[in-house]
Image (tube, rainbow, N blue to C red; front, side, top):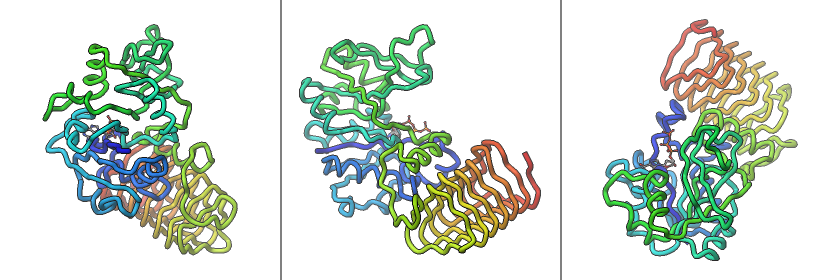
Length: 370
Ligand code: GTP
């Protein structure tokens, strides 16, 4: 079974975390998201995947190769320019030869793919769109169906009085490749605003497949933190790598933890990380590889990527740190702040809101307090 994963988006909403790392390569519980996604697809019977890439293709090639290590055949195809979601699949059409799964590359879901495929085949569908319910439908594109689950209408960000359903497009499709004859070649063309409305007009069979499976778009700062929490508290099905060295505390290789440190799970600690005297790690928290957490520092409900050095008595709460930052002693980072990569933040600074610190920022002692 073949699949195409769309990984060409710019990931603007997650900037500055995506300045140096393409969105699908950002870590989820210390593993590149796309790698975990490929493993999940392999487990669900997909053995050949086309990655529709638009920039930093070499990063994908270096990390994933030809997919052999993950047990599948992988093609990494770079677009000459952004083609949009449907245009990107049109661009790899020559690699498709039958019923194909299409995935947005920024969605974590434990949708039952075989169940969706069986439904697609039973209905003789040309396009099947996975749907998920949301609490506030005004922020999304809604998909209306009839009693037999045939798609009737697409509603983009409707006004409250126009809302007839809470089901949104969940970013997983099954498509018969002949449908791509409706997509103009070498052009920017989208599924939601281009191909799907055309299929509605032509009358080709297009069905919705609602599901209550776990679903999150990892591409927003708030959901990026939330998805870590959901996995660590067991709401989302995800394989956490490493050894469980204490209840709900995972070490992903050799870690050096001072006996006086307090660790209250769920906490994941990357290989080569050192936790100094009296430091406190409070879950749900993920600390990357080769980090150093200074004495009496507190890390609470935060996500740190690899190579971070946290000073004595610093306090990091509900925040994300990219790669290789240095945080000075007694500095406080809180309230959804994002510090990207290679920043040096001096001692006694204080950020307690959702600010974004760009790569390479250098701040002296007591430079910021808000
Ligand atoms: P934002 O810039 O934060 O909105 O991120 P995004 O561009 O990734 O956003 P969006 O949610 O619209 O994209 C949905 C999926 O389609 C993501 O997995 C993107 O990587 C992918 N995608 C969007 N546009 C393109 C494109 O032009 N080419 C390819 N290959 N993939 C795309």
